[in-house]
Image 1 (spheres, rainbow, N blue to C red):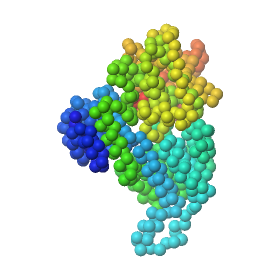
Image 2: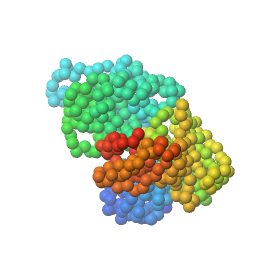
Image 3: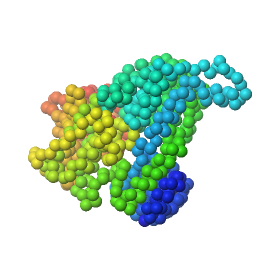
Image 4: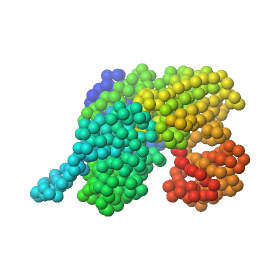
Length: 527
């Protein structure tokens, strides 16, 4: 079997592939046309961030069985296209955790002591000692937004510097926070109390521009901000204005909404320290991920063993046909639920009833947990690490089975338990393969969990649906389908509107202001 290595990885990684009996071609730096012209001849491909495996490239990959990413980010891989074509997509989660945490600390020191600016001043032949007065980190409060693997490592190092560490993560248990030495706070409390704020969340509709004009207004005057996570979490225009006004004393940015940045006005400010997405750029991290991805790709192609797959569970090949529709349903239901449940989760109970009670449940349970965690965590959640991540976050995962599924031949139910509330989501398979959500708490409905959706709580009054449709139509937003449920005539109701494109915050605000609309949330399912 042949493996294409289309980005630079270490020689040790290449040796692992070759010693496994694989025919290895190393062709870094290919453009899209060159990749398209040769991809059909390979069983596996190893990439980093430069190679773009888009849907049109994957469509030409006639023999491709596995994509191995040396690193965790998979923005350059069309996972949906790969899954549809039966290609396993693997990454190497955790390989850059320490490296990114250390880079965060390096930037923390840089903006506290103005080290880059002082260095440049001396290189220019100046001696401006008074100009570069800094601040101590000792006894200052560091606010960490997102306590995943990287956030936890940043906390550990900050505590070693004798900083006071507070953290916001809706899925961080009090017990885990205490073990990490972090004071768990609300998001508003984090903004209010912190002298330094560092973000370590994934880029999701909920975290986009979480650092914005309104949140900055809640912060201390002279706060210092760090972003080594993803571009777009920080509103760069709002940050620019806050620095110019003096509200924000300094910022350190390793990531940008557009890379490389087209608008240099923010990074041109003296108060800004910036690096070109170097969070994972150490020799150790690159060596670690190269070795890991080579071992994983070789193990899969030679032995059929799947590890760290982000789109496929570790299950025997002869069970794939039976389990795949249930795995898809569970993942979509988990992702849907996680974008609605706003409280700290204590327990996820997966109930399999009817025909679902007869299938091997392990992969389905993991798919539900993975689906739930994926939209809310910075690190890549896969079928290998999802149960461990849930356990680390104090989430108890339970499974129950019953032969009786009521009116449906098969049914999957997720019961999400928080401190004082329980949320219930039920789903089934139409024609034994098409996923549907048929219950959300007290509401019975029928919806296809895919793409962009608006979840609307409203009063059951005439004209509600018409006003939503008219507003979206006037905004040029096409409605794909709509689903409805209500508790009783004239009472509370829910409407789920599927649309063809993402909805801007401006349009969301207009929907909220419509008569009889109680709340509206965006749900995105991109599996």
